[in-house]
Image (cartoon, rainbow, N blue to C red; front, side, top):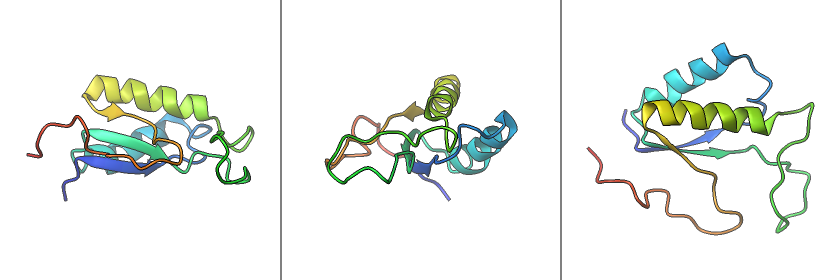
Length: 100
């Protein structure tokens, strides 16, 4: 299966060991040949709708560790990592060249 864009749930990814993060990248993102990753399900779902999105608080997650890993891995492998727009429609393919 091929996917140019992966909307990857990263909730609770931050505290996981690097081996887990590497496996997630390899088995999901690299396996489908994604050229863009949009991290989802990282936000604190106890926040009221319509408010600015906030990461899940420690010790439940470490959003900064998740994003640091994803951005570094994406930079190494030529995969664009970008957060979704808050409460707005988003063209997930914007800026990507035509599919293979």
